[in-house]
Structures are given as C-alpha cells and as structure tokens.
Length: 97
Image 1 (cartoon, rainbow, N blue to C red):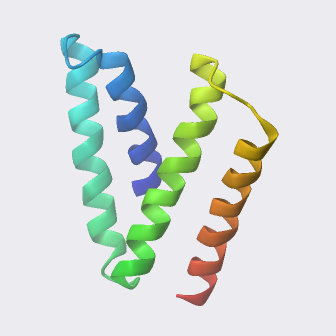
Image 2: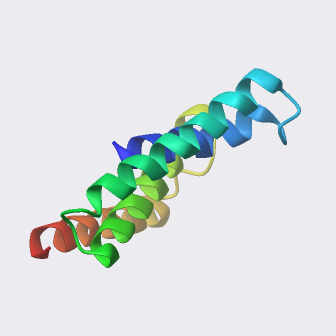
C-alpha cells in the first residue's frame, strides 16, 4: 500500500501543477502522508533497506508506467526493459528479506 500511495502522490504532483491547484495539491499531500505511514508500518517487520528499496521501486515503476499511459511519455524498448530490471530487483529484495 505504501508503494501505491507513493505512485498516487507522484502523479498528484503533476496534476497539482506546482501546487497551484488546491484540490490536487491537498490530495497529493494526503497521499504523501499515507504513503509514509504505510512505509513505517512495513518497517516494523521488514528490514529498513528492503522496505525503502521496495517502496521507491514500486513508486518508480508505477509512475513511469502511468507517465507513459497518462502523459504520453516514451515507451522506448530500453526504457521498458529497465523497468523490468527494477521489478526483478524488487522481487529479489522481497524474497530475500
């Protein structure tokens, strides 16, 4: 859940247009807080390095995919391949935690 809210706040930053749109800005800030709260809960049972790496990895992959879908960002094959490498790293860290 921490990773999902990580994605939400990063996309929210784009929609808030530099926090010039109050509703989008408020939802972004709420998503930030919820994301960190879930991360803190995860760190009760997962090593800090693993928890943080998985959290940021989920966020990075999710935001990159949504950037492609919502904002027409590059879908270049090497970019997508790199996303798969991040996913492989997340899975590896989680399995070894």
